[in-house]
Image (cartoon, rainbow, N blue to C red; front, side, top):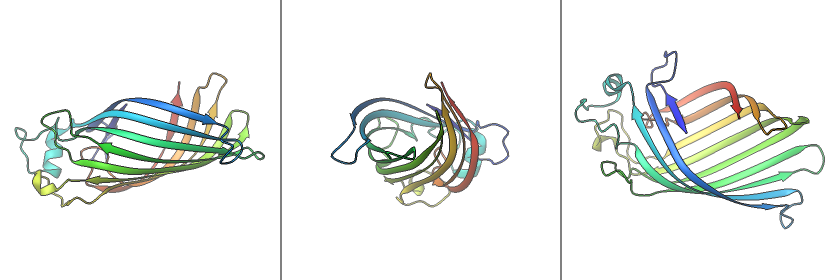
Length: 221
């Protein structure tokens, strides 16, 4: 996975910060979990991942956020980390009405970074996802979903030369999405959505909290 971000609001394209995630995931699925509710499904996911985050517009970033110089800023090791994630996903399909409900609690544990120049700033996190969807025709459905993540950390801004104050407060991610999706016979997904977020930044501006409204389209081939 590759994500591109901007910390300036008036960029035509996202390019000022990028982060990459590479991981391996295994799944264990139990269909028709009758001891919970009929027509339900339970899935467990175990993931091991590496993630690193980097600044492309370095001059502008240092001017806005840090007391560093170009020589002393650690662009590679500052936000390089590994983690294990364990998540369960419970899906319940109502017998009538073409409704489905899902609930996904999860936990991440951040290990000591493999990169020698990186610090272990993130400790662990708790995740809760939930959603409801309603089929409106064959292959097509509307949905709404929420995501919450609480990340415990050992990060103090004054120790790393950043301007803003931060003293081990948790990073919090709150996201809401409403949309329409269509899945064709070949399992290709076409998805239009609108969303809202009140969260810490995901890239190197992680100590900022932003409220943002989004809209867009996903095509999963």
